[in-house]
Amino acid sequence: MSDVKWIKLSTNMFEDEKIRLIEQMPEADTILIIWIKLLSQAGKTNASGYIYLSENIPYTDEMLATIFGRPVGTVRLALKTFQQFGMITIDEDHFIEISNWEKHQNVEGMERIRMQNRERKQKQRERDKAKKLLSGNEEYCAYCGTTEKAAGLLHTDHIIPLQNSGSIGDENLIKSCKSCNSSKNDKPLHVYLNDHINHPINPINIELITNNEKLSKFVRFKNGAFQPVTVMSRDGHATEEEREEDIERDKDKYYKSKIMDLLPDFSSIKNFNELNKRYWDVIRETRKTGKIAKSVIYNNMKKWKKYDRLVVEYALRAHVELHAGKKEEYTIGIMRNTSADEAKERMNYKNNTIPFKPKRPKEAEDDGYNYGF
Image (tube, rainbow, N blue to C red; front, side, top):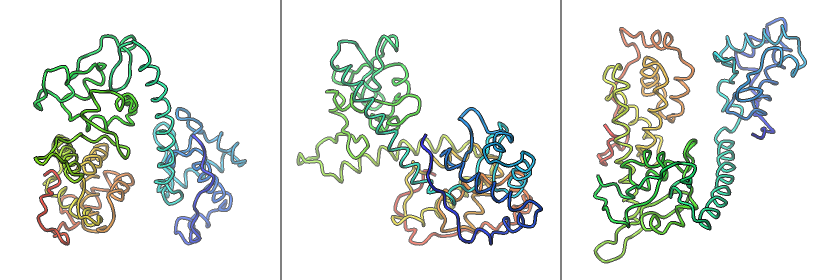
């Protein structure tokens, strides 16, 4: 992964109370130099604020002392200070992460560049693989391109699932590997394909799919996503609006089901459904359209699962009452930087001192968008 050539430093950094406290320490200048060097090292690592030698090898105090050219005792004092002040976190495997890394780097921009590079390399691999498969005689999975020799016995997949009124005719049957067959299951074809465009374990081969005579009758690839081929309307012409409505309707139905599957995970939080809905009512005010896609709700709730439920409850309540106007990423930041004990103390859990007053979001007329609840 290429390193980042720059980091952001605020001209007001020396007015920060943590920096001021550090400046009163005996080795203040050296500790502050180590802080700048840590930020620089995080930019070189280019892993969303993490600092490590490799993905499997964290830096030791001795390694950092060598790299920074400072005594190991001073490095340890600096790391301990930064950790106490919440400027870094060190996990159980000794990996160091800069807290609030987005303050020092355009995280979204760098992630976009990394994504573009990954997609560019993936597309080239797909083109090479598709060219080889299409010119040969070996049977292969129509979705990912895994050959029968590599995958073992290929399965017969119903392009439109039988549960969704798909036929058993040859026009609805296609060869697929076991992994793609089980992953697709009864999902609409375009939903499954879009979920696996950049899948880390089992990505599809876009080149193969767009060149497949059968699949191209059901989906088309446009603007970086698969779209269903719409059945013609009564007058024989499907409008772009009708096609978009079909796509959104299928996605909405799919992610609503996924959201409902997540709800039991938060059952220990009192009145969670009501709290969750009020939270998303607040978040929708950050959107010009006043709507939140169910895929956004699902993906965020899935992230909440890794946090203690007290932390989740505190973060949602705090955002609703104290941070309206902030987007959902801010809530994840609260969860990441709050322990269960801190959440319990701040909420005064028994008395629930953070008020939870119903708020009617502006222009919240009934648009039929109930966020899955």
